[in-house]
Length: 151
Image (cartoon, rainbow, N blue to C red; front, side):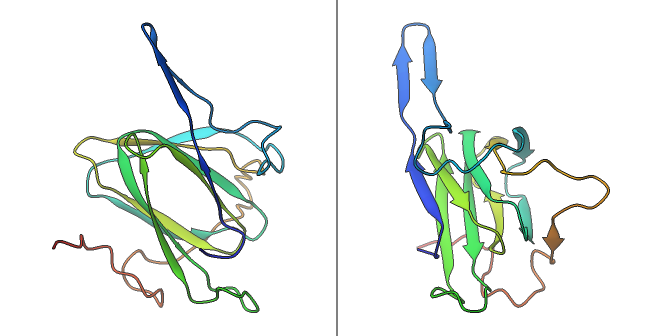
């Protein structure tokens, strides 16, 4: 596991009315601070990658569909520099993945329907000066290919 990445198993509580799933609480061990909450969607087979933040920590969970979330650690001095982690998260694996600053991340929707992700970052998005640094999803120095691995 990449250094400082944390995974929280989410508990789904179903009853005859529907389901409830807590994603992040301020009394969770992994909680740092609140910036904002937003949702984003990804269509099947679409890749949304790569970017990182210098300041912000992301807390990502998927509430509908499934994604392959991939992280890459380029940080100098990190004990896990050069490592890649894959997480398959969503309806069939309800987890929250906490992504520390300076770790590249992105995902691909692997479900047959649109995936809906919720992020609870530690910072408010600054439209004038975003804490977001991007590289192309396919042409880059990250040792990862987004192709499905059949077998």
